[in-house]
Length: 473
Image (cartoon, one colour):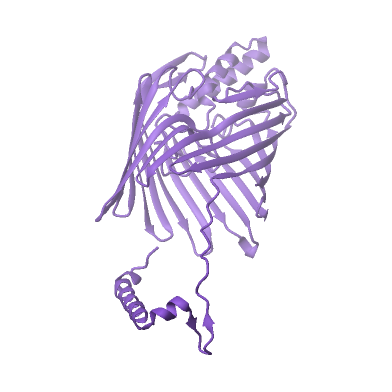
C-alpha cells in the first residue's frame, strides 16, 4: 500500500534522482563507459557481461491435498430424527465413519488462455448403512451395491478462462461463484451451493456455467465498477438442484467500490426458476473492524409445510432474507466473527413443532401397530425440514486465536450457532495444528443442545467428533 506521506515527496525526489543521473552521465567520458570503469585503487571493472534472461514461468502447475477424516457419532436414541431414520434397525450408540479424499488441482496458462481443474476422489466406510447419493455431473459412483462402502469421482471445479486484458475475463465450465459478504451464510449467492455452516471455509462444488466480467476504474469517490453476467443451464444431470429440468438461469452482479465501500447489486431469473434480487456491502470501519451485510428477495417462493398427520401443502409468498455481520481482529491476533441471519424461507418454531409431532405420532403408531405410514410421510417432508439452517432466525459467533502461548502454527477456534426461534444451539470447539508446511492435524467436536422438538435438540447425535489429517503437495 502506498503511504500518504510518500506520495507528496515522490515526484520531487524522483526528479532530483534523475537530474543526478543525467549529470553523472554527462561528466563520465564515453570511452570509460565503453572500456570499463575504475575503482578507488585504479583497477578496472569489466562492465561487458551478459545479462541473464528472465526465467519463464512454468505454464503448468499441479498441487493439492490428501485428506483422511475419522468421525465418531454418539447417537441420541431418544431424538426424534433418530427414531425417524432407525425405527426398524436400531443402531449402537456409537457409530464410526472414515473418509479418504484425494483433491489434486491443476492449472495451465498459455498467453491469454488458462485452464483449471479440481477433481475429487473419495472412498468412505460407514458403520451405518449408507443412503443413496446423486452427485452432480461430471461424476461417477463406485461400490453401489455395498452397504457400508462408497466411492466416487467427481469434478468440483473445472473451467477455461480467456483474459485478453486486465479489464475483461470470460470463463466457462464448472465453477464456484463466491457471491455475498457473509461468512456463515450467503442469502445472495443465487448460483452457488450453500455453505456448510459447521465448516464455512470447506471447498464446495461449483455449478456448470459461463460468465463474463468487465471492470472499469475511475478517479473520485467511485473507484471501480464491474459487471458480471452469468448463464447457468439446468438439465436432469447438471445443476439439477438449482432449478427445474430444462431451465436456463440468467444471473448478474453489478459491483461498485464507492467511498471505500464494496457494494454489489445482484439478480437471477429464468424459466421455472424463482426470480431473486439481492444487495450486499462490506466496509472497513477501522484497520481491524469490518462490517458486512446482505439482503435478498425471492419472489413467489413455494414453501412445503406439513401437519401432524403428514398432509403436505405449499404456501406461496415473497421470501425476504438478510444478514448483518462484524469481523474484528485485536492486537493479540484473536479474530471475532458475529453474524445475525434472518432466513425468510425458513420455518417458524410452530411449523417445526408440527413436523416433529408428525414423527412422534408416526413412531408411536409404529410401536403400537407396526404400521410405518406416518414415519414414511415424515421422511418425505424431511427432505425440506431436515436441511441445515432450516429455522427463521440465527446468531453465529466464532472466535479463533492464532498461535496462543507462542505455539507456532496452532489455532484453536470456538463456534456457537444458535436458533433464536426455538432457543436451541450448537457449540463447536476446534483445534488445528500445522506440524510441517505440508502436514496439518485438525480436530473438532460438535455438540447440539436444545429443548424437545427444537432444531438442535432433536439432532441425530448428542455429539460428533472429527479428526483430520491433511497432507499438502
